[in-house]
Image (cartoon, rainbow, N blue to C red):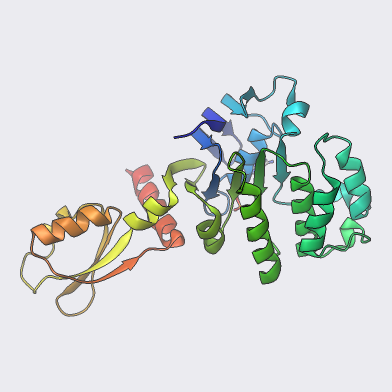
Length: 304
Ligand SMILES: Nc1ncnc2c1ncn2[C@@H]1O[C@H](COP(=O)(O)OP(=O)(O)OP(=O)(O)O)[C@@H](O)[C@H]1O
């Protein structure tokens, strides 16, 4: 894999009702990585740790080659754009432009033309006070502000929360353009399958504070399939099928057909051919279905 812009080593954060980690994670430069996981799995907690907004109990974090917490964070943060899950209420009394005037002092690379262009594309009313903006409007403003200093790394915590379909499409386009240079990186947390499908190169699954793995998106989507197998009604069913590579689920699908789910589709198909087991149908799994199956597998693993 390419050079890492974020490195997490053995990160643990213990809270009264929640334990995050140990997390080991390398985010590659030049790609979009999406962290996907159910509510409360620790995605936002992880973002806050990376930005030094909260502290781990143990482990190390390196962002853009700098150890977090070494006292030079302000220089590091000039290279990062961050959209938190929730907008900062403290700024509610400011208009968009007043807030931007304030922020740009911290960023030598602030590009006023880019800022205005983003606001125009997102159709943000700059005369409004931030507290009076609709949720979607505020989100669009937060995105514009996070991008206007041309950061090397964009960290987006559920960026499309509250966006209407038109704004959502604009955001996807804006983020694609941001990545065009080739050396920039996006780390995002998202629940939106379509967003992850369109943007992400890599997907990290997270459940109950633990990483279930990092996958290259296209490989992942090519690996998880539902196959319908014509068993011919023989007693091969239930005996041989348990040897199907990557088997994650099996259920009758009417008549002599059995529906199986596999996370190793190519090997499973080869195995079916070798067993002369006809495949009567195949269906790709969507990301949310994969997450459900991975979550269930993790639950069983923790129970064992
Ligand atoms: N400041 C805090 N103090 C104590 N516990 C916290 C704090 N912030 C978050 N938590 C707990 O940490 C866990 C993970 O929360 P987090 O917000 O990181 O999850 P998430 O994956 O981002 O969820 P969502 O998808 O709902 O945004 C939750 O159980 C939450 O209650």
